Image (tube, rainbow, N blue to C red; front, side, top):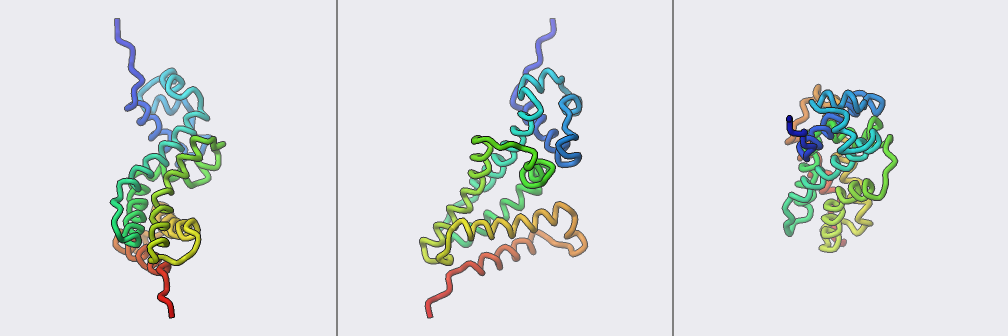
Length: 201
């Protein structure tokens, strides 16, 4: 008698990655659990066993995407130079998006995030991903390095900068101008310099 297939974490992650690809390429309507199972080399029974429904798959993809981003940002070393840390966080965000472009699309594009009715867990996953950025800005303000403004305002502006660059890069809009990781780093550094506290006159 054949042993039953184990619906393990490896299968779960394979299904989430493939679901993200389908959503980012075809939109939420392109996510069929039957197609998802076939593409991942498993059965619809396995998909239902792991998630329960199409809506649950979408929710799980959304949470997984932000958790992977969180892990990359949390891995950035914290130093006594918050401005330098902000730069490294920006580059980690850039690297995360390029490593998992389909998950990035689920987080921020209409094909993914806007189709989700976020609950408390999903909202916390998204909030937690931004926490390292906000906390680094807070350290910079408290240390007198960054402008004395609300930390979330500066954090949001820094995120918007790198998000814009990454989105254009992933969409292929920057290919003609040959934007490299080096130029992205230079742009982020210039943005951070603009938030430094002006010395008192």
